[in-house]
Amino acid sequence: MPALDDPMFKRSVTYICEHNEEGAMGIVINHPLNVKVAELLEQLEIAYDAKSPAAAINVCAGGPVQSDRGFVLHTAKSGYHSSMLLENDLMVTTSKDILIDLTTERAPDKFILALGYAGWTAGQLEQEIIDNSWLVIPADNHIIFDLTHAEKWQSATATMGIKPWQLTSEAGHA
Image (cartoon, rainbow, N blue to C red; front, side, top):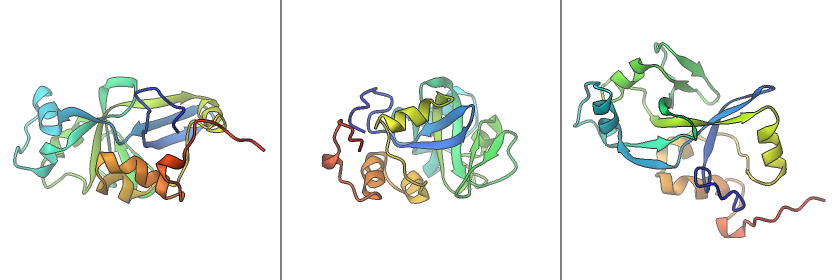
């Protein structure tokens, strides 16, 4: 929402990976960094195929927590050491073995590589929603993977029948 002016979250689309009584964890999927997958793999001394389209994908700023750690949100593909199955046939993987596959035929069909994640303590995300800081929609794999980063926020709001100019920073509670 417009009232959320933290640069990390302004106009962000965040996929919530886990939400329970202890808190929530998500990955911002539309804030690209000026770093390509190939550059990150090179820094990590992981062999990669520079001709692969995946090598040219921008890495995202996934959130302010553990921004030195990689999180790969991807279409379901089992076999990685540290993966969690999510809704919509998605997974998040944090182990190095997926990085080795990203520019090969073994890569998941679609993925977003992010550095860091967004985290909320128990009740914090719920309060932010009550405070009109976030709009909530069901996950949409088309928005997550098929749109440019610039298109994701407007597309997410459009699923609710809202145009960005219609949003206000004022909350209305009846």
